[in-house]
Image 1: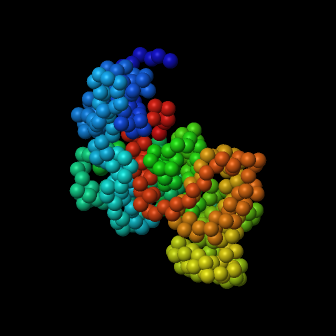
Image 2: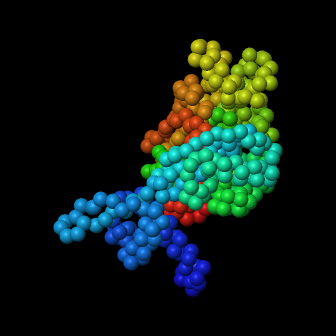
Image 3: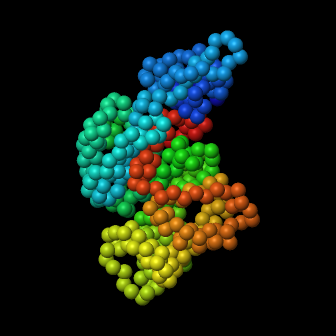
Length: 404
Ligand SMILES: [Zn+2]
């Protein structure tokens, strides 16, 4: 389809060429200009024009020389890691974890600061703006080197509109973020669901790099899922895809935080596992469970490790329900890789052995045969790193996956 290209379109095409070229240099670098021309289908003149612009902007490095059969050795290009920086924020109820990544996706500065965000809604944006300005100053890095800010938060997020549609944990509904925060900070601001951000990071810089179909499952405060399908994150119609924690596992089961009955999260989150323990002992769960579910779950894990049968059973029930639910996902999506992360992954084999058993029992045919599974106990910083990768994803726009 050919359209008349006006000045605005020409600028857009130049931007797309520039970002997809950056993506090629990221994945292929160190790489020669001639090779870039072959791979991109762009003319050598266009490549030279764009790369000299990128070199002027300090985004590229010219390095060594390629193997050459006589004659002049071509100069190789690669990304200059400190050519620009991306800020990532993980928003939680009472604090913000903030990181700054270089263009290689490496953390160069990080902090956690207290900020009352719960129920603050639109009022939080101005507060956040001030805090981020101060954060950049403390990092000692120049404001103009920041190529953007990414915000990851729990809930249903419209990354297209840059709006938080509904975040029950934060108590935010219909809060515009990208436009007002971007205006305050004078840089592009991207938002996404926190688990999606984590999956994008894995695709760009982490274990997901070689795979086009993988799942990131997070355990802990809740049960989250980031879906990478055909090489890009899958968000669904409203941006709410991946509410794995709220799939039903017990008919007329326990009441979940979302209001529904029998959700996976009501059994397999920190709070759910501890709840099972108290129910099995016919005891009332302590009030502290609502406020500090992670601490309570760690306490229960200690009990399970020292041989407490009821504690072991509570983890076993969570693991089994998780395994059945995961088998449903595998049967639907046939992923190449499943990444298990989040603070809840610290439970290890006490949770994962029953999970693997149930997964094996419920997976169709040999769908799980070639599937890899890895576990990592991701800390708060990895969530913020995920948020920053929303910026780097735009920066290294893939020519195939250029939707946002
Ligand atoms: Zn639920």
